[in-house]
Structures are given as C-alpha cells and as structure tokens.
Length: 265
Image (cartoon, rainbow, N blue to C red):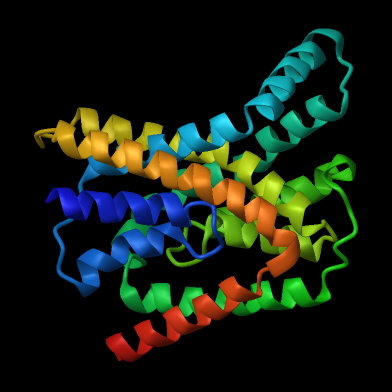
C-alpha cells in the first residue's frame, strides 16, 4: 500500500466513522471498485485507534465524569446523571458485542460485497429520512431512559451489516425515540468508545497471530490522519447539526447507493 493510499483510507475512516454514511462501506469500496490492495489488519487497527483517540479527546470531560460517577455508583449504589449515562453506555454496548461474536465470521464471508453495501446504504438512508421527519426531537440526553438506551444499543448491532453506518443507525433510533438531534448524536459518539475499543482489540488479537510484516510508516500515517480528520468531523458535525439536520447525509446515501447499484448490476 502506497503512502497516498494510506492517507486516503485513513481520511475516509476519520471522516466517515462519526458521520451517518458508513465508514466500513467507504473502506471496503476502494478495494472492490478500484482494485486497491487490502489495507490489512495492522492498518485497520491503526485507523480505529486514531478515531478512538479523537472521540476520547473531544469528550474527555464527559468521559472523566462518567467514569468517576460510575465508580462511585458501584461503591455507594447511588447514581447521578453521569453515572446513569455510563451504565446506559455499558448496557447498550452488549447487543453489538454479542452480535459481533456470533455473526462476525458470517458477515465477513457473505456480506462484505458492493451490492449489500448499496442496498443497506439506500435502505437505512431512507429510514434516516423518516426518523428526521417524524421524530419529536424534544428530549435531552439527561432524560434518556434505560429502555431507550437498550433500543439504541440494539440498533447499533445492526450496523455490523456493511453500509448501515453505526452512527447513522444509532442517531436514527435516537430520533425515532424522541431525542433531539444533538442528544442523539452525543449519545452515539459516546457509545462509539467501547465499540471502537472492542473492534481495535479484536483486530489486534488477530494481528498478533498474523505472519504479515507491520508497515510502521503506514501505521503512523493511519493513526495521525484518522485522528485529525475524526476530531474535526466531531466538532463540525455537532456545531452544524442544528442547522443542517440529517438531510444532506440522506441525499448522499441515496446517491451513493444508487451509483453502486448501477455499477454492480
């Protein structure tokens, strides 16, 4: 893999991990449509670590408060707002973790195809449009309930299907449940922390048993580019969401999906 390929792939990961357009789809497509070589496990771990570092840095105060409150709740059995949110994130992560363990091999073998990506890109783009249209958009994150958190967690498990978009499906479910766009996006981003950590850890374990030579230059490029681009995306997306809504991403998904269908049919 050339340095240019590494920059483009890391940029795609950083830009699309937190936007509702599917990072997995954008990382799969270059190899399938352009004939690029597979980036390999080491690079996948690198870009996941870059995006993880970005979300940890951006939400460092929220995460620190949640960790402290979560720890106090275990000791005192009393929970404040931050402690509840921490427990909700832990519990909402379980559906994706279980689904990943049970279905990862099947998905990797049968669903990482351009036609699947095209169909899921369009289908979940339309669902996002419905959620943006009919969602009440009145509930702040502070009033999130356990039931709502679990439903968002179940939606996150669906994102194992390439083309779905983890951030897209969790924000869609959040809007359908009545959350404001900012609350849905914030919970989605915080919910990404354990998921990205698990993905990097899972890939890292496979990497330990891989005979492939680690290209440290590409690793460095992947971490740095994905970190900077993801940090910028999180900041701009949260700032602009109240003004632009999700419709630009709905239109993008529909155009991307239609283009892919034309390409593969």
